[in-house]
Amino acid sequence: MIEILKAAKTYGSGESATVALKDVSLKINDGDFTVLLGASGSGKSTLLHIVSGLECPDSGSVNYDGVDITALSDDKLTAFRKEKVGFIFQQYYLLPNLNVDKNVKMGADLTRNRNYREIIEAVGLGEKLYKMPSELSGGEQQRVSIARALAKKPQVLFLDEPTGALDEETGRQVLDYICSLQKEIGFSVVMVTHNSNIAEMANTVVKMNSGKITETYRNDIRKNARQIGW
Image 1 (cartoon, helix red, strand yellow):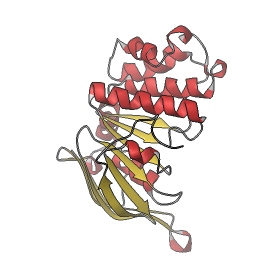
Image 2 (tube, one colour):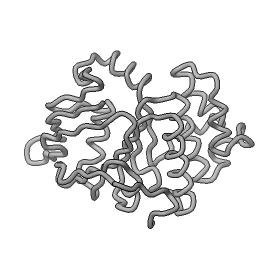
Image 3 (cartoon, one colour):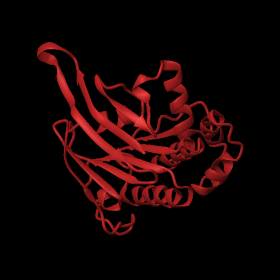
Image 4 (cartoon, helix red, strand yellow):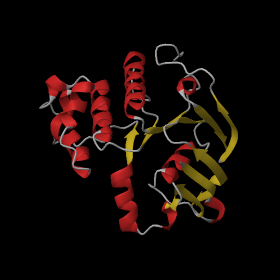
């Protein structure tokens, strides 16, 4: 279980200070699909960065099975991110001078996963192992970034607007694949989105506004990527 307790975060100081999070508390169960839902500036991406260990809160704590990652040294926090979590962002962050195989292998090498090519096959890029990012479509590049994140075999997968740059059909394919892998492998998913339709795919939906959680609810029936609006 992940437990966030009274996490607060402010960027800048003085008159230019922006309060991004205001004493946010939240529990995320193992194996859950949690969506952080809200408009731009609501604090959802800041919360994602803090929960995943990319940033530290100004105050509060983030506990993974009782271990407060905000109290870890820089080296131990880096090791935690390396071993426990995967990231998929709206931007693909692929290395342009490495082909598909080597981009995914970078993620696999972090946890010494030698079977990473199975994931490349699973995302439908088995025939494009040696293609460079510039030779791929946007949807294919996003699938490379997904494969790279999953090649680490993370316990928690964090996604920040993963379909924001994709067309509808490719976006549905990406979401469908992530959900099918989650059911198969059992990792937790925490996704940031402003799309209320995507929230219908989650177990738990956390609505945010002005740096606060305004509502948390569970979907009795989860829809798949082909059933939601766009």
